[in-house]
Image 1 (cartoon, rainbow, N blue to C red):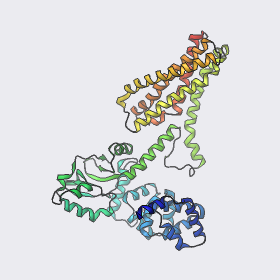
Image 2 (image 1 turned 90 degrees about the vertical axis):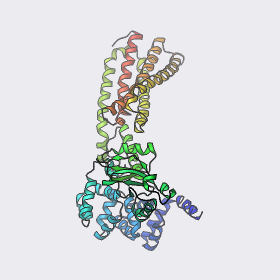
Image 3 (image 1 turned 90 degrees about the horizontal axis):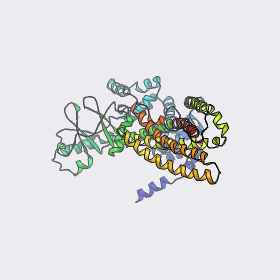
Image 4 (image 1 turned 120 degrees about the horizontal axis):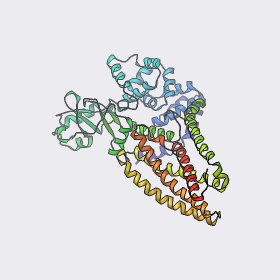
Length: 468
């Protein structure tokens, strides 16, 4: 109960006020109090505090406070610092301190660090590593970005085929402190081939005299070192796993991916999808306030140019029907409504399908099923919107029956087609290996705008009997 009360207290502290207090203590050079204040927090919060210290007091103060931390705490805090802060600290501490951080850092965190650092700092970090360690690090660094190999760690518990349960538990006690997780253990046979998995719960509940072969789960789920990280994250979500074994081309166990690393991938993938749906390129890891103005311009300008050109086509369609619009000026009034309704209808469908693709709920095999569903949805929504508008146009705006039928007939068809186009484009993009997120938002809106105007003017020609 005491532990629960302590956790609750820590959760509800005013974090901003504590940072202010910490900065005041540093300015007053009360370093003993600074150290005791820091180590009361978890590593994530300490990392954030250090970054705030650097913003307020400069890099020298951040490095000074980092050096005050106990060695085991400083290593964990280092892994949670931003890339820029990690580089600053490495440049500001001694080679001995760097060696200690690298020795204690989890292997996957070290690989993540080395991937982001410039070559001169990588050499500085690896200067005292052994030849075998360098070979292993280089192997990991050579895996493609965003692959399972670039995410995995070698810090896991493996058990040998034929080991007794008692021997397995003794082995876990011996090596478990260095492992990322001990709740899932991996059974390997000759040549390190993965043959099964066993949970810690199963080992604890089993008879000590049993062998691991009797209780392990055979033919376990695994991924290749070259499997894309998005596919890996989908497997974690689908099967509710806490760790996933990674094998090479010959089925040999080379590492595992833990759920904490996949959570970062899911966050990055979601951010990337949001950016692409809004027509923004660039790295999903970039923070808004830390990205320069010119970088923001480069990330946003290309799609704006493309969309501007698409709206030039829309303007050309309007220009070609100038005579029609001049002979029935009230038609102009309803163009924004039709274009907006078409864009929103298409965006609704594309957003749902993109989400379905991301969660593996919608697949390419579902193409015609999705199309048929959107036809029915579009038909129903189109009828409702058209009837509402017909009533408004006739009894509120007092439009002629011809104009009302033109607007409402066009709206019905626009909504139906926009729903289908919005749903189909992400699936088509997936089929041709383009990110489906690109087919949302601005892209769908620009296409449906052109389509809406074309349909509207065709209806006007047919019903009102006026041409271009």
